[in-house]
Image (cartoon, rainbow, N blue to C red; front, top):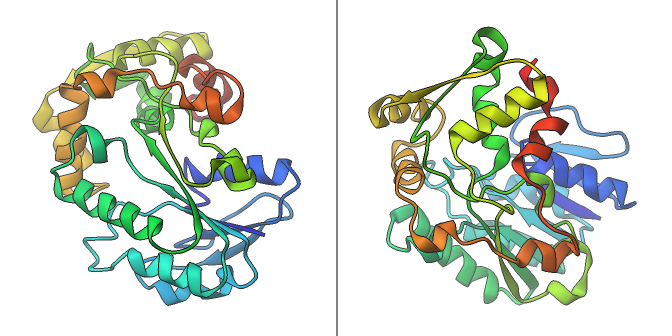
Length: 276
């Protein structure tokens, strides 16, 4: 049995679907009750209180650990989650980390994540670490404005990064022993700007979508409603001025999944219902 935290979000949901499609038993964990695919057990747990994860971990072979952005702000120590998993006899943990731990290693959130990576390496369980950059599913921020106004509003309209499709978050790392002890950088196949993402959504819809460029201050105000301000600032630094390492197209998705990463246009076509 495989436990997936953050299982009802934009990353955990497609992973849960991929695992169940592969015939795996999955326990989906999220902070609040939520609908899950047929055959999936759901348990509500707040990761800021690691003991709440114990019922999900009982009998589990593997854990996909996706941390909420506000976990440190809540005063929790995510290392305790690894301790709970190890104590429960979980054999393998796959940690969703961040590309930023190596491309921008000095921010507080990235220092904390690097420390968690080190804790996982020293935990005694099998491990794999995934370091994605941006996600295609971040475009769902625009879903309401596309539906109601035919509009995408975003900062840095002509600055791109190689965003990864959440469906490419490697389920193989939970199933395949060859990935134990590996660290993978996850990107999409191309550098794509917000303006080009808007065009891809328009193509999927078959109708026009306008693009409006937000100022940095406007974007920060909007993002800070959904994440800690420090995380919003970190994200805007990357989106506005990606460094060469953040622009690099990684071969790791191809290596892990045995196929090329999906482009943003593929993600937009599969998720077009969210924008109608």
